[in-house]
Length: 526
Image 1 (cartoon, rainbow, N blue to C red):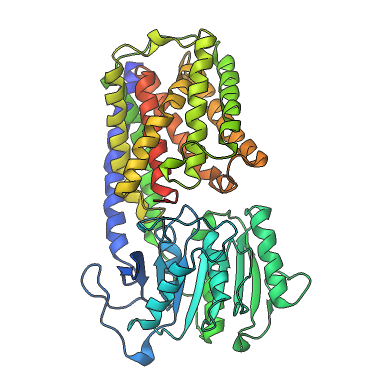
Image 2 (cartoon, rainbow, N blue to C red; image 1 turned 90 degrees about the vertical axis):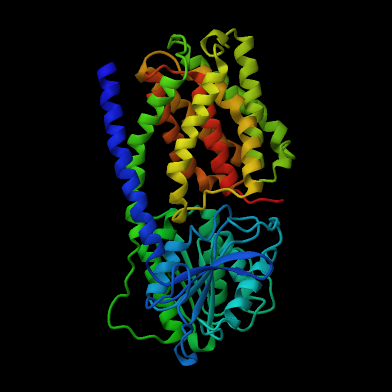
């Protein structure tokens, strides 16, 4: 066992060197690519302006404005719920490489936008002020042709783009990516392209397809066929992108190519070849994440060295632990059905999930105590050492993963998000502690098996909550991300279990990591 741990430690050290190299390359490629710079729109709205490839000024500065007749058309690009402009950056770069300017911005309560989020439920124009500020900015910008504007959005942003297009008559087109539910303004959206992924849920695909048919004036649109005249601003097209889901469509070359082809048709651009679509940051990120998996094994071993060993615990109780876990989560359903008790966190959607896990954690510890399975002797000795080890492990995880946010989602929290994350971590700690007490038993294989089963059970019950109307539907769209996060938890848990299995250290790492992921991404209401 010791020789295996030494081998894992060496592999983790080598992986750390590879990871650091990948992060360095990511930093280089983040600054390269199409000319781009961060700007702040009126109202404190953070945005990034991308310009077609060419000369650029010093770092994070745009080149001098081109002559008026050489200024490119511009796409105003909006993200979905619990996303931000960083998540849209690959798509923005690909559009810019094709010769168009792009302004990507953070909706209120998202990313770096510190204005409070306004719920869009029943109010598709709730984000209209942010869209209006972005469109007004590009219309006045000397870098772009402000008279040639297309609005585009993903998911929630798609609906916001469509709604804005029904209220502003000066646009050239609109692109709805995996979204689009209503048309409520006085105008018909001009030259509308509807794109969705084959893996999008029906609740996303069907309304978009119905809107496309309505605008095309047909009973049902034929996918891949264009309707209407673009010159009359009546063009409509609907396309399904195969092999992608609601999230991965953002990085799909096929989706980007469809967008560029539609822009070319609108602005009558003739091309001799296919525009470039390279974003080397994607390879850097994949490279770094692959190395991180091995680094995570080393983090678990180091935490095991820092924290005292837990007592050996029999494996037979794992099935009973799964039963208690399911019962605890189900018991929490009624308490969050009407109004989540932890709404003071100010995290839209996250309030519900954090409330459910916090209440389930209290119920799980209570059920374990009633069943005589709380096993305090296995985790109480030197409790503080376990907390310190867990926080140290999380600090390493944060330092290595936060830089990757430039491609996926900004992960460095604002002061408000930091406070919400800290409170959320304290509140969900009982759940992860109860989870580990109930399931982390026996040898490495048994402990990992029950751990994976428990995490699958949690995801399954969240889906049940969605079907019952207790958990927000958007959680369905986030399940792949949650599944990936839980898998990372289990990799760290397996390594820490082999090195001593301190349950407190493991629960602290999981609670802090989950709270950080939630606090950094969910819309903020204050």
